[in-house]
Amino acid sequence: MTTQTVTAAITSSEALAKAVEHAQEADRLISDDIYRSHHDRAAAHAVISQAFTALAQAAPPKVDPVPATAEPEPKRRLWLPTRRTKTA
Image (cartoon, rainbow, N blue to C red):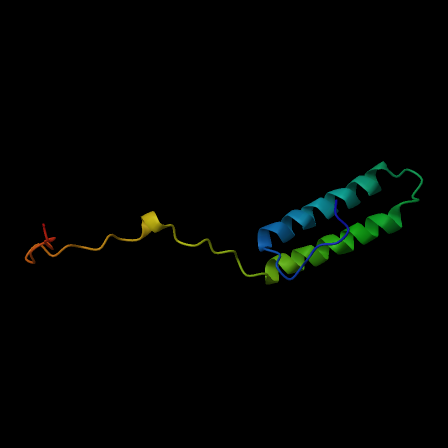
């Protein structure tokens, strides 16, 4: 688990992954802590999880560029002659 994350370039899927990671850590701390000594850390993880969830909702979805194969091929006009190359 990282302690610092660059939030300026974070995508919504990365933010959701971080939110789940922190929520699971908070749940683990609460469920494993029979003496209630780690509730402050669990609360901090829960707040961080909520912050990453808000970032995921605010971040624009990542748009993949269109691959070159998905672009239509230029149509050849059958009524035009093909280009001829000069032969020496």
